[in-house]
Length: 296
Image 1: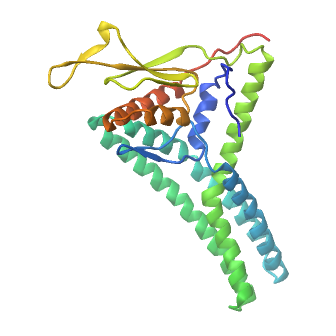
Image 2: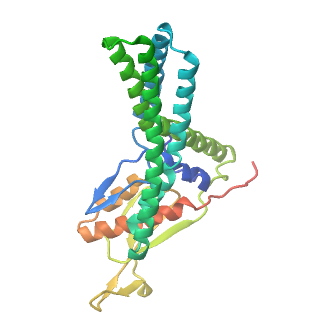
Image 3: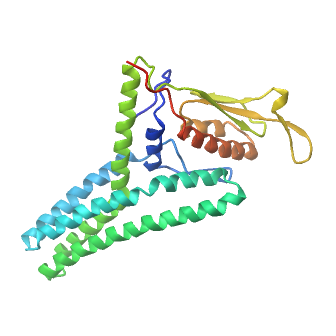
């Protein structure tokens, strides 16, 4: 997996950053707020292993089906269809991930609209999942219609096809889209190095105002600091004037860096507020472009 190197001011393009939305995330709950994850990829090795297992399971099942006289063309067609359906179903993962992150900091007026959009995309994704399982059932039916015995062999072949369909649902999309994302990241990083670290370089420092006083901390290119400027005070609900903080970043604010800054806080209010504004800041970074077009 690609890792950002300390001291490098490399930032991928906005297009490549948006491919992060397709990769697997591990949700984390902080002070009652669930962070769905954005700039992270988890469990890719297991997804790739599961994807490779599909070839073993269905390859053995195809061979057994063919020896029993099942028409191989029909089975191969459904296997190709399974792959296409798995890729199409995973195309919904990007808007699902984006909407889940937007819900973290959405206003009460926007929350209902975002939840409806999220529900529609999940339903469409589940529809394609159902088609994959139906395809697995068809392969089982074709085998049994020729074999016509309910024994250990029939059960094993059925298990291979059904497990293959389940692995398509949980692994194929993540394996394919993560591989593409990794390729794009490494390609742009190579361009960054080949250009003398001028192309795909961090363009601007980005700042997010945190409307409460947080504990300062720094990790990588991200830091939380108190704002001592008089203009950085605001009125709280009881009329008192309170200090605010700044979240300053250069390049990608990874989920790991955000989690570290949150864990550095002591009060739940500090954690919740920093988590909320941190995710909002990440979404702004998602569309931020680096320096591009520099001649080699």
